[in-house]
Length: 462
Image 1 (cartoon, rainbow, N blue to C red):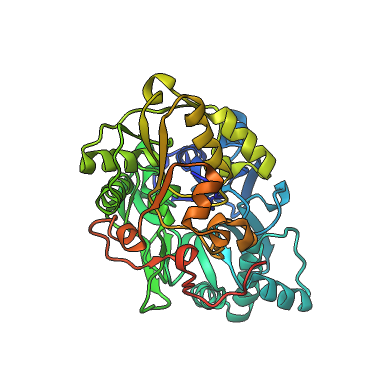
Image 2 (tube, rainbow, N blue to C red):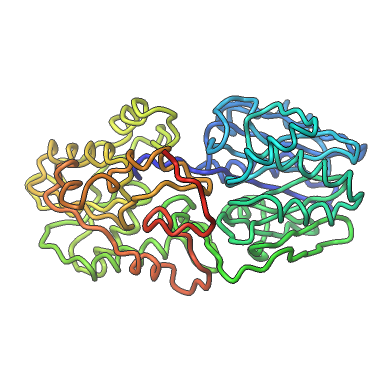
């Protein structure tokens, strides 16, 4: 995958079982969602006296928490968050969950996504006297809830009003009073799902977080839905109906773990099908097909199955190096690529190689990978992307770039990109081919990074 920064991972549990270790469950859930953010991690837990205890630090889940910390986070409701910053700087002050105290009580918020109107909302709240401790859009959600709850004195009315006021991508888990709350934006940009653990309920960005804790997947939280979980059970509020849904299709391409299921579709199967569609659209005379680990591998397998060209392992990946998009600077990203992958001369030497990756964003990683294969003796390197050219910036929680001029497809045509990365040929999966890849899905997709069709009007970046 080419230097695309991910969003965040959220997790929550409402425990009706005294023998469940809430903080331990949240820790395990965050551990399974580590791929969604590696800058910081945090857990907030509410106990019987309505106090919310929170621990958050910069680093991986395993670095932020130990037995001592987890043993001091006791309660019956817990939420957690893994972060990669898309709004707000990369500092511990912006780590989540964000905990706020106000006249209506205590609230803890973990948010995945990006609000496009958060600066205006923040300015309005500051003019009313609200003070902010972070530069994150997530704190704005909490402040807005505090203001609205004081005005309405009714939590459900406040949640509906806040959900209709904030605009953009948001999948939220929240502790408010004695309730665990899930909110998903009307377009359904970001994933969020519900599971059941014995007599308790859990929420997670992806279903992959459920199996290790023994929970069963129940359903996806619907776009435009507020789900309230308390001692009475579940209460669903559909606060807004959209004629159009716009789930981020890059979840299937790259972001989600391959063992997750989203909208009833296996992420792994969608990637296999993307490779099959790529083979149907692009026929190349080659000796082997290889995939760039990890997210390019299923597409390469699908291409091999459809084309009949043998699949081979062309790279060895250093498993101790994180995803390149996690690195906060371009220099560090380039260094990570060189440490992360090494080509196998015995597999690629003297051969015409089809190499499949999930995307090309800035182009620097792709250029380095092509160079690795040529150094290892590959006779030809044909670069195939299992998604279309990324030409536009994302405003909905994926930090593709802060300016479209940093996107290689915004500056060059396909032949120009091919020359820049040094490949013998370059081919992309069509947008229609990508949309057909999640077989059985019945939701609409956000494809703005490919075609500029933003579901919500946005101010141009750069």
